[in-house]
Figure (spheres, one colour):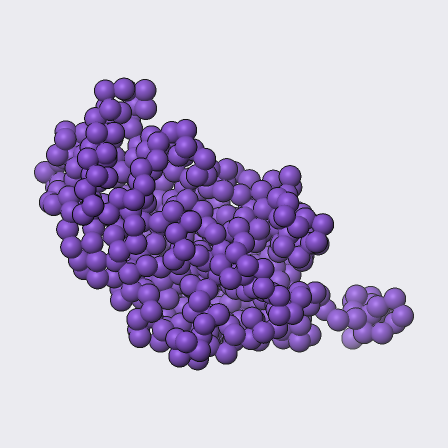
Amino acid sequence: MHLTNLRVLVATCAIFALDFLDAHGAAAEPPSPVVLISIDGLKPDYVLEANKHGLKIPNLRRLVQEGTHATGVVGVVPTVTYPSHTTMVTGVSPAKHGILANTPFDPLGKNLGGWYWYAEDIRVPTLWDVASDAGLVTSSVDWPVTVGAKLTHNIAQYWRASTPDDQKLIRVLSSPGLVADAERIVGAYPEGNDYTIAADRRRAAFNAWMLETKKPRFHLCYFSGLDTEQHRSGPYSSHSFAVLEQTDELVGQVRAAAEKIGGGRAVICVVSDHGFVRTDKELHLNVAFAEAGLIGLNEQGRPSSWQAIAYYPSGSAGVMLRDPKDTATLEKVRGILTRLATDSESGIDRLIEEPDSEKLGGFTGASFVVSVRPGYRLGNNFKGPVRRTGPVGGTHGYLPDVAEMNATFFLAGPGVPTGKALGRIDMRDIAPTLAGILGLRLPTAEGKNLLDSRTDGQRQK
């Protein structure tokens, strides 16, 4: 090597080394990465009462012992995946951030089952926005609503036909070359809509690779095998518990990768989007509306026209009117819903109208919000019986004051109080709390920083 080039190389290495020295010339610790791990459908009592359930989940229990936790997280309307995950990174309700359900309102099915995949639909700043603006390296593997997100390194959540072409879409919609680079090391990335525990295991390897190679300051990780199993066999089933124990291993794997790049230190936050209830009865509002002539059906039994329709039925639903000012239709819908609500076999426990429905912070534009009690679920059929039994399974989407809908929040790492129980918190508090740990602020957040004593009892303005 030429002597001049050698001198340049030595000088560059010396400057680089200074980045890891403190003011006294001693080796400085690398910054602790902040990792947000979502376990879709994780009920807080699974962890807080692990002994009662006979669960072997040492990594999740370690977070409780070493850090701060909530006994429950009051979620959003509706308590489903995409609105909840967007609230967790914005600190605002769905009515404000704009992700109103998993799928946009699409009564005639023109969107072919498309979801709220695109970050441009989020109307307020996210954690990754303010972190990126501050010059921090950010990354994500499969976090909801991240197509086109301002993340330094992003493997976006997306699917369409569940064919090999979906893999091409994920590669194109993620950061250029990122998936291919990772696949050369850890193997093939899962199909986009594969949310089994086996797919979670493969995604865990991508999360570990992302952390170890890209060294982000803030990283997002999403696992959904538990949600899939609870929909199938219900909460508290032996199958669901088996999936949770495997998910716990993945949490340990991701935490180890984070601590590896953080010099043995990392802030780990495990959250969930909602709880679960066991159900075996269904109510199909759209069948009742179709029978009343409010929904016209084509030869395939799908809507071809509509005057009123239930939007995103689960444990609750918004009832949308094509013309909210059409008083005749409004009265007809009110009559149908009132009759159903007076029938104890329908399962309806609440019927909320405007303006009270607007105060819920979700189902924006709905003329009515219908909620059923646990044990019942709202279905999306347009033909057949209005009420039916079975099959047994699990669901969510109920109003957030239903105790079984409580979500999860566990936080541990440098600067986090040890052994602190927060009681029940608001889901909108998660984003400003993580922003505070990162030394950032979300000016639009409605929640508060749970670790800042100055905001005790006060929402961020």
